[in-house]
Image 1 (cartoon, rainbow, N blue to C red):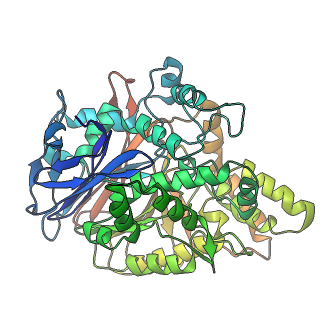
Image 2 (image 1 turned 90 degrees about the vertical axis):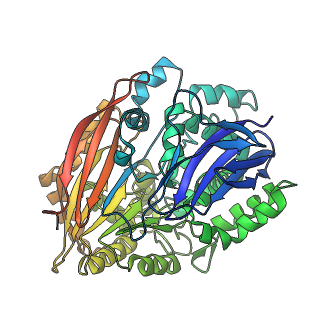
Image 3 (image 1 turned 180 degrees about the horizontal axis):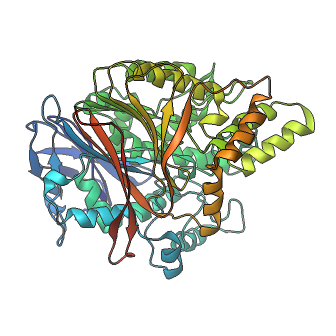
Length: 542
């Protein structure tokens, strides 16, 4: 009898359709509600993304999952998983959870203490006692779903049974098979599994999904390419990302136009599509005429709320002296899809657009310093890599272009424009201001980590980075350079920084919006959420 390894994970949900992702231990037919799909196979692993159609708008439907007609989900002790479609025209009330940086659950006491309480587990536990009308409508995971370079004790022991850890890259993962282990470990936690079976989940990667500082610079890429393990590592990262994360981000109509998906289904039903994804991953990493081989950015619409998720890692252009967060063609796609009829634009970016001022100014200066010839440029590059200077301000041309896009949208009819981010291991909200008049409230909202709390010794440095006198010093130094223009946007922190594991909830009601952040406490056995901060994004409900 086939067994369910991972899932069901509810991914794209619309007004009349949904997709449900699963991994099984052998080829089989997967049935969800009245829909079914046969698994496809990649490197001996078996997956299905089941499109469920014919649903009624604005309804809540409990569902089961069966493999070859044997029911395997739900499991005892958990409420039924449900598909909740959106009403035609949308609901004025909308609730999206977001956060980043989630280490796996662990049985090791020392690792448990280090990681703290999983905020998503705490949220799931609370949902058991809530009316489903209070449940989130969407979950956005903005990076670091797995940690390929910081593996758990259990995974290190598992890797040691496959190969010699004394050989590079040591305890880090090296290939597709080891990546599947990371997803199995991270996504098997019962509360996380139930939560994502009921709340539609969107995702994007960040650096630790591949390796710390992934695509920081061309120098970094050259250093990685010189190793004998990096190509298989990046290939495995992108192939598994495509399976476990990317395809679920797409609507059924987009899946129908996904050429690689068609090829995988065609080969992987009766054969093995590993070679298809291997070639795809290789093309996805290459730059050709200032472009990358694939676009991971995507768009979702939830009534009067638009979510536009930007790939800030894989799409970077670094070679030939160019340096941009995404290619010109992808930025044009982003600008095109930012236009529309909505009240709230949410820009998902794993990396914050607006950071602590001192850090932002340092990154802008460092980008210029790295261009200098000789030892000065090499020293600046070493500082860039050692200090993680690779956020939006370190790609000033791209950052300024994003600022201009946000300004244009904010001068229109939207009520809010919010950039939702993670990565930096603290929680904060900053309000942006522009020299020109805007009609929308513009915010940087950052929530990190979900389950990987920062060490206490580092917290004073994050706090100091927001100190206004320090920011003024670095701004003065930055503007002394003839190669750095003043930033086209200013911003002020309105909440934070807060530390510990947390989850953010963005709530809208018509044109009103607010962010509520809660911190996870209570440990693995009794996870709970405690209020941390509420940030009102609009002055009043229209």
